[in-house]
Image 1 (spheres, rainbow, N blue to C red):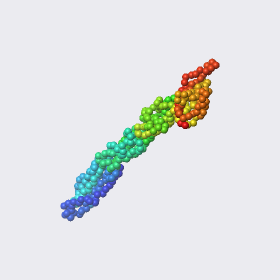
Image 2: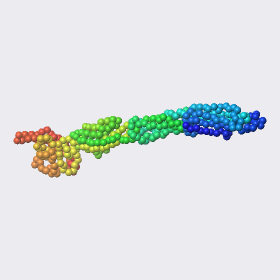
Image 3: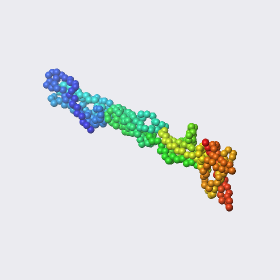
Image 4: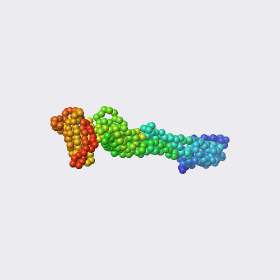
Length: 369
């Protein structure tokens, strides 16, 4: 609490009474001073109820009369003017005035406005400023806080800010809520596992608010990728994949804030017939391979061009290297340009002979030259 003593001699109003006009000895006006007892704020304001105490005296003739000079307690006011007047025994009068401004009530925060709209679906994805606003009934609001939010990511983030009035009072903090996400989805562990006529694409589980789109494209094709999955699981099985086709899968993770993270994987499903892939176009003599049949001791491989069988071979392993030229059925053959079909049957021990099992599979390839 500060006490301010102001001597108000300058500008005082003098009134000469009849005794002075008649040549009374005291022609000097009374002395009036005051003090303000309260807590000073800013810009001449007081922030506690303030008492105005007057001090009136005359060292020559003394004080004959006074008015408005009692101590006065002043509460909240935009400006209360008090005047103390006094007359001495020389009938010389004077008066002193003071205006007191008191604001004991802090302002109130009424809101906060962001400097831009949310970036996506009600979410902010980069730092955003909030300008707080408020009201004050007496001295008025001088300034309110501008607060920047830059993280951490949260669906229930908040910023706090205050306002200050002209007297220097500070409000209680106000709060503004927001949703903030500056981080793309964490897409990890993307894999593609090829099977027989299917490809399983998998990724690490994502938070419950994120989702995934998976699209498939044929390698080398100009056709637009086809979306095969949309959802929040951690894997998808592509059952429309064809054996021998090279596929590219794009896995794109999305979040509510509009972020996206992408990873790509490739796979080629194969059935029992492994190489060359079904429908493959080749220039050199290929190695035919297939899935081994448990317990088989040898295999019968038959090769056709058109409707004519041009080779029957009996390899003991699940692979056969073709030659450019060979003899079969008493005729010479060569691997000329054209389309070829091939079949594989397993053979098992049966007594002193063999018995054939079910067809392992069939496939085709094209020789280009």
